[in-house]
Image (cartoon, rainbow, N blue to C red):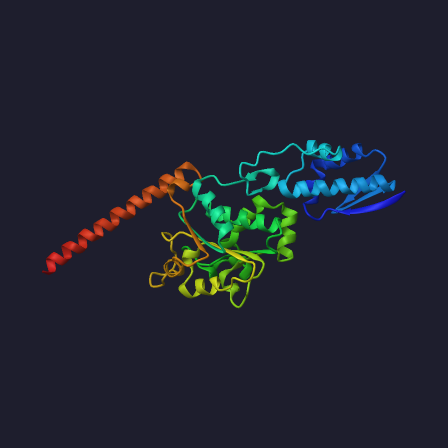
Length: 329
């Protein structure tokens, strides 16, 4: 009789063990001759050497499956333990599988183009209105690269520009003040990575979420780097950010040039960067439109209504300017 210790390190142990330890109970039934116990990420098994070795091998296979699909159904456990290939899941071009095994994939042609462009370019600009999924797909691509060992870390950043609020009036220290601006990035990650694993990644800095100002002086190697809301960067900030790109790294820059929150006298760094980098080899660009909006159907109508208002307002201003010029003559 020997004891083996197996570490569940690739996936969230809670997810692996199942609701009310259902998966562990199933494994005990499938290996009746073994004494199996689990605490935290450690599984202990006692029995004959050949059986414990077989058990460990199957646990590794189950961990690989759970890491890929973020789920571990009972039928898969039974198939793997019996030595049969698990029934293939319909992928539908899934980038990754989110929490509870939900596939995350492109839902519009432009989202699919973003995936293709990311794979073939080191710097990709994803432009368009809110709700088109550009940031969500970008984060999914970063998580995929991390899972596939194509990158060692993910770095997500946003400029901390107030949309009608002042940081100084918010409670707490600097982290507490900045976190609300970064919350959309946290929300996306929580959809894709189990809570325990995400906490581990954050604590070990495998995943870093920081304001743009914290990027200065860094060279980012072996990383997927995402700059969100880039329309709110200044010309100096975006140049500083783009030149952080290191070896074996990729960047995605997302933004909406119609939603600039900078002071009127301050030029948007994104607008300038798009002009300067147009035609540069290795730089990709995807432009999303109203048809790509994947939020509530009312969001598309709201965007269209505001665009109509902006056009009418600009037309009225042109008429006023023309009238004032005639009066001055």
